[in-house]
Image 1 (cartoon, rainbow, N blue to C red):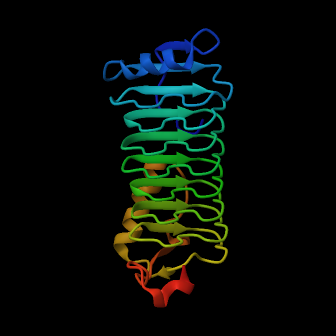
Image 2 (image 1 turned 30 degrees about the vertical axis):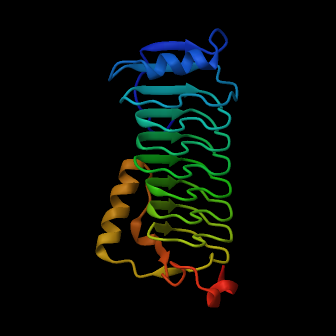
Image 3 (image 1 turned 120 degrees about the horizontal axis):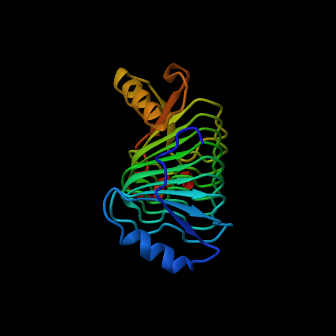
Length: 232
């Protein structure tokens, strides 16, 4: 792992625990507690609904909706993650050392989500304030209808990036496919370079902010008009 969050102090083995019991133990932990989850083996809905700053490291691949509704937890996945990683996250940190499937960070309100590998389609859809940093590339329709927060992509972006975007900032180092409706490239001003420098530093990803371009909303589709029907 490039940036381990903390040494786990209590081991929880999913070969001996049910998922519901695991989540109950994590949700009831005191602030500052640390856990190492063994044998996740692609199980779904792990480490969800945490409401305190506890540290959780999952040793292996996880299934759907890992770290959902996280509010303050610092969760690391030493492997890949399935659909819906960190969905509706409120605060805290979620880090995945491998790849993430579709809809990572969907509807996230706050905190930081780091995917060191690639993210599949619809990464960051309907963002509402969460910051996402992807070390690799993202799939189609990422940041669809994203409203606030940031999506930083160190690789490429497939078609439909930022479709029907509102005020989320997108930073892209690689190449973009056909941009989504109302998504345009914008000037990279000093405040954007400063924000990107901070995001990359917090994500622990070595990249030169000067290599990135910024994308945002052209603000032509904020309100539905029949005359814009063909643009959606």
